[in-house]
Length: 434
Length: 174
Image (cartoon, rainbow over all chains, first blue to last red; front, side, top):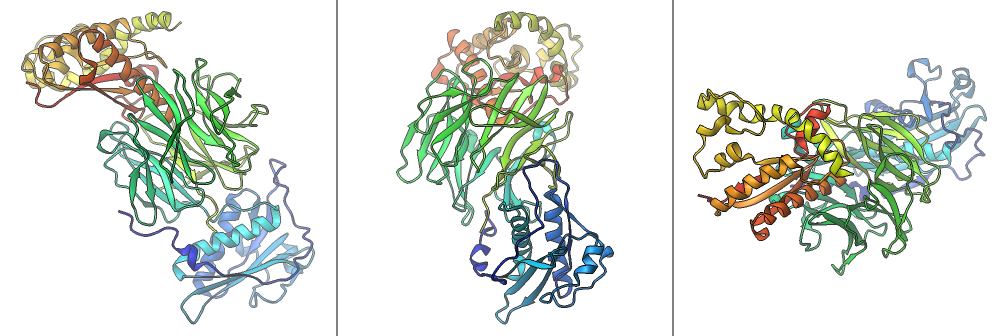
């Protein structure tokens, strides 16, 4: 079923050499905690030589622009034409067009057929190189190299890890609402290289990445038996998770990738269980006559946030990883669902229903500091970029259309449509691929 | 609280239910050249002549294969009780069908919660049927959450048609 292994090039990308020994004290920096930051003007020049170099620089510029933190300058405004990316540029030419940072680079083919991509990041106003690295890969992985370079630039200037060399697994939807076809699909975070990884015969929902393996967990209605599955991305091999006497749903991995946590439906009640993937033993964590679902671990694995309607409406609760000390944390107006713990541990993202609107918001793990990032007819199902700075979710407008994916900064700024070929829902962000 | 709610919405239901009946049976009515006018949602006699007694079509058309729920509620409303009573009588008369109750939710909820809500609705309907003499062991349930709407629009009349439990017959039956 799976045509190719999307993670195969991990191995090919083994080599990464730092071109410069001592990075300069960068003056060019962005404080991404500030909220609505003024994007940093940056000039991303075409990598030498030829069409591929140009394509790589375009992907780098697009990543940086979409982050909302950088404003790539139009190439038509460039004065200096870079002919030797190893030599210092004429900084004056770049200062004139207010390019505070400048990226130069080169791609060459090695004797063994591999692609070698090098880049240098310059601080125009300080007149210094800030970073320089080179990467080797197979030529078909050129987009990944571009994303890795964009991550390096992002990290150098913001001080935070990037998130461009990542993928999104999601539910690709097609057809009318009353006869919707769904299949799992995977794509690069910028919407490129999308491909289906299941057929569209059965309803499939809520795919989630393993934190450390080439594996996803999801729910499928295969054989009219709604169950949680594991899918090996390399081999396409699938298996049902656990031998439960009813519908299992809302799966997620534990941060160490060793367990799947999910809900089991029995009659009118849903309770939360984990299954250890090595021993195959299952453990029941909640035991109420309520709907307990959407569990998500804290990044250190010690706590679990979930939603429950045990108090009437859906609210968020936090418990210890063993199921003890179940405490409600959401107390605002409306109901709260689909909590997801940030990879940084500092926040929990959620869907909130209030006043007929669906919002995406964040709160601290103790329930304080609630902030709504976006509100509308229907926004649902946030997922965190691995650096905990950006969220993706799906939005459904009223009427007969279908859902689409959007990303938004933690600050609530920089909302962006994520291009997909058809309708898309249930996005889940991968860890950094490196 | 949900009881009061159920009554208030109960007045709405004949209103809310008519459109789906029209949608469901219009084609049947045409096929059967039915002359009988549609009078009320309770009277499902529209396509009465079209179905062989004891057939699954008979069940769908003359008994009513689905019940509807109030927002976020899983309690069986008075109108739904009447439908389930008819279902139970019919299923007792024709006991050889495999029975699956499908629970559904409207689109105004999150995906995971709606899966559980649909399951609760199916469980409510199953429990009611079993209280009317259909062995619980004969009734399978499945929830499709909000994934299989029958009506598409963006207002209450349509969402109310999607909050449903549908009794689906399988096997040889007759």
